Image (tube, rainbow, N blue to C red; front, side):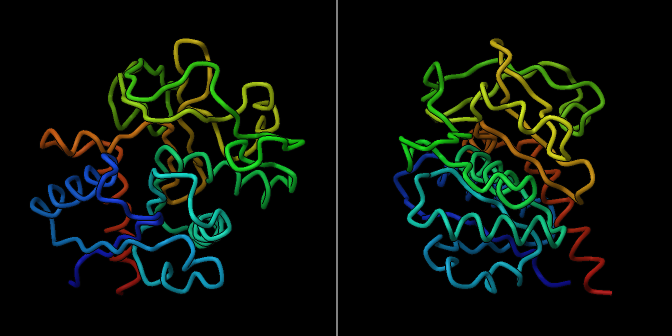
Length: 237
């Protein structure tokens, strides 16, 4: 079987801790399973064509926003969602996956990220009431959710490096949709999301990849890779 191929959608910067951690996590996972290959796909390269994404078994939209091309990141996320490709969005990737879903599924075409558009009429992704740069906090997981099953506990502690997230005042716009909030912080604000009808579509406002810097593969990343291996196995038949 050929190596697993993971598309890392984002603008690689060796100085970004999360980018170092992502590669460490994938190297650790590769040591225990068939080999893994990953390609960094700059967002600007995806604005006109997402063909490079479609050759992979899974898509991870990574931290590091604002991206050089919001359009490119959104296009890659849309491809993964529509083609039922295993998808993981962490930190900035989580924020942009929420935007993609709101625009392309819910029809909220005016939904914007306040970091790029401070004066937006519909700031779906807004400045957090409390900055979460290098902050660890507890998250309560929804019983019965995929995340709850993967962690095996109801409360977990994770590390963040962000200033933006889903606008609590506009959270109701996702109510009743397929994109479900499955993790909340102590203030009740949404910090984790998933799409039950998708092969694997998990969004984390936090940075699960950081566990790779301590020699461990995070359960969300392990589950993402399992879904990608399963997808590869089906496509190779």
